[in-house]
Image (cartoon, one colour):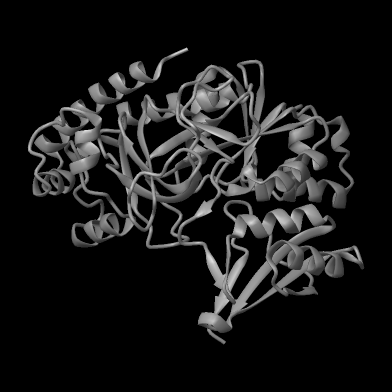
Length: 419
């Protein structure tokens, strides 16, 4: 067990090295830090958080627009970099991120820890049912499993049926996916006659959406995959793999604090959240120094743990309930604040819904909300209307549709219009 004092001592040592390098050779952050009065490495963590400015994604977007294609958040000459990845671009223009061989190796070490905390060992056969796009999470998970000595099974370029056949034929024991696609694969197995009771899968590592921390979504995945257990994790292209699921508390994430200086701030006042309070997760990368993120506003809404040593033995920051939502995802409908994860919990718990879409229309206090569901259960719509009204005090117009979109990566189930 590592104490808080030891964690913070290591963080300060790595932070000072990061800031020294950044002031010397990173023009993007060097200028920002000097403008904030930080011309030398901080004397303490508190000194750093009091003086260093926050970074928004838009700051990085604007830097790359002004200095294409990679911007100025680089600590080394371009020839020293080996990897380019970029954000998904679902909420803003994509940001490109470069890594040297050393910084990429540090990210893989983080993903190895995620897999190990999930119970994956070198004896596992790890299945990757997705196409490898430009964002970095899937690449890191795959290469980390290789580093561990696992047999890895890439299944890009296949339909769900082909992926299921490959998973069963190769007796995969673990796979990585978004929660949405883990559900979709399980549904496809039922539709196409695959018997998942003979699957060898025992571990499903999910990320990319809050679904792994939503109890009803987790339960649905485990129902579709008999004998398997869901393990949550979260990370971002901008920072890398951030957390692993506590082995003793389902739904609790621990931040890997040797790699990140983490803060939880009130998103409005930017004051530190107290234990048990909701806030926005702010991260500074301590190992990814070649292209760092310094006091980066992740927009992830989390609940800070009480600071005590966890039953699992970890003194690392605990995020109870995992990633609860995003600060920019909340929608106010007739005075009620709605987060997508809270709506998904009700939809999944009601049962019988294959896929759904939420439609918000109108402006200000006159917004209306409707839910389109795909289901074979004739009573699902009425049951869901009642459950949503009970949970939120709002009348959702629930209707049944067909052929709603299926998602392999991050799901996009909310649509908003002014009409």
